[in-house]
Length: 396
Image 1: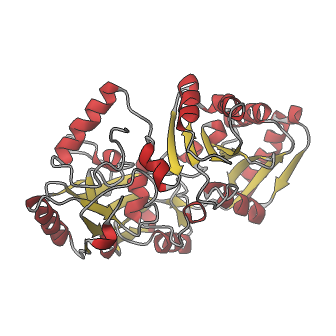
Image 2: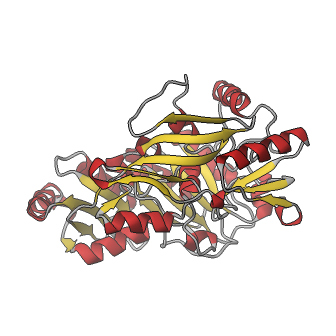
Image 3: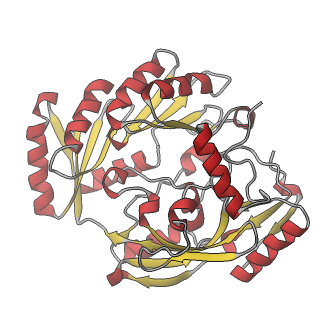
């Protein structure tokens, strides 16, 4: 259990203070819960830390040059405020960071540091890549209390480690990021979404695979619980109009196709991004499962034979969100058994604390990968003081 409410919370406002606080923790044999706004506090293993390191004081934009497509800001900066700044300049984070407030029961979209530490990308990942592909540089305090940096305004590495990639999705277990530099890109002029109705998961998976493999440059491909298969096209208006007609011809065998215009399309993909189709009932476990895209329907078939679930299939079948109904456990055995048959990994994204404490939240690692992960952890946090046990620990 995280006992942070009863222990000391440090809130630094400078990198020097972060270093001093980490060194104090080392000297006193304490452990730290590293966080920004705690919007994803209930993802990962419950931790029993002795103090907290609130990074939300390290905020503000240090550099933003829209014409150079680069932004650098404190890791504690509000993601919502940064996204507004980008929107005001007709730019965006191309990887479409999700806002999980609906699923996790909070009101904040979090901080830049949390966005990178968790590494979640939205529907546009099929085109734009992952979060780590857009991080140009980081400044971080390690578990040794040492400040280090890598990269900057260009992709560059002189440390021996590709630090932006290593720190992305590390959940605060390797370092406390203080400043992050991103590549940002212009927002598309418009978007349309093709809607195919009434397809089962196998047919929808095949339609999405065909669309993503075509020349029309699809930027979103999802199957929703109501049976709609959605395919997004973005860009300048003449190009989108032409590609819509091309994609209709490619998918003619799947029946009638509706087309959503910009406003409706944008609303639909915001809901897909934030997984609004699943419920806010915190007692129902939610799994985030990544499999080979063409195997998404096969995975769903295996699970639906065993469990009552609601599913959203994103990334053309490569990402599956599952809500488990009417179960007293997270059903980890069934979820991961199916993953083993298909290939991929599963994360227990939401569950009551008892289920999270008793299950491997992140996909268990093969021995060789676990050994490599341990060596990297030792380099950055040899005393295991940063978010200890949040990602990997033995499950009794």
